[in-house]
Image 1 (cartoon, rainbow, N blue to C red):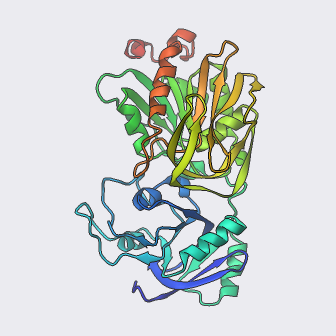
Image 2 (tube, rainbow, N blue to C red):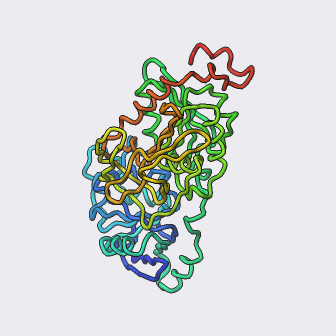
Length: 395
């Protein structure tokens, strides 16, 4: 589609921007959010956590490195729409295989460029994330606004099943296998199993609909919940799965959506942030070590928990392990038994972030240490009777 073709963006409060069509021709709706990263747009586009969201890039010039076949975090682009100030006319990276606009069009992603993304970002920061529509076929803002206001909201949306794998698959450990992990795919990014594999962890990636029996059939040393889209308060099946796994004493590590579901499994509440955290330069304090990490974020919901007091739960005592230094949002939880032994933990941010900081990669090592300190699955009677007896020596 020609770059000069007109396009229209309308927010649900009526604020309107006119620009040029970018990507596929047509119309799209979603929740308008802004991402502050100066790089990594390919990872952003292919992150399943952005399902049903229209992403506004605060970096003014996007597409200069094109698209390659090595950096995607999943098999497709997940954003509902894409908004940039200026789309690069050429791809200058030697790794590029095709231009960004071409790939957006090929995958049917409607976008808009040549608008004031600074003004749009300031509007979202002041008014909060809201529904939005982008169209290259509608010229009447009032007509598009009616369709925006009738579109689905993010609050109350249960979306993990829409982005999860349909069938289980295995990512083998690199080198000697030290542990086996059951990873529930709520929108998992490709770099997560890779980082686990580098630490000798074989990862069995399971669909979001998996049951406790499905998890235990892997005879895992630990359970992992990935990032993903949607409202954690609308997600119940995975919360019940996690509670059952905690009751069995299975070590747990969760990221992003996995942090929110961990909180809910422990009886804590979650809430929607005004405009969320999305970017790669967020300072977070690890309260267990006193170190400050520069981290990558992508979340519109958070856990509500007391920052300076532990909360008793049926599974142990939960406390806030990480906190965002910008706004005191809870960025991590840890569960300990009465003797102070770590049983499970989670973080709200992304230690696996490609095209992001690496300060938080130690969390995968912490997961390995947690599994090493806990009895193996077979030793605490978690393996279903008669299942996988021939594999007990491989754990």
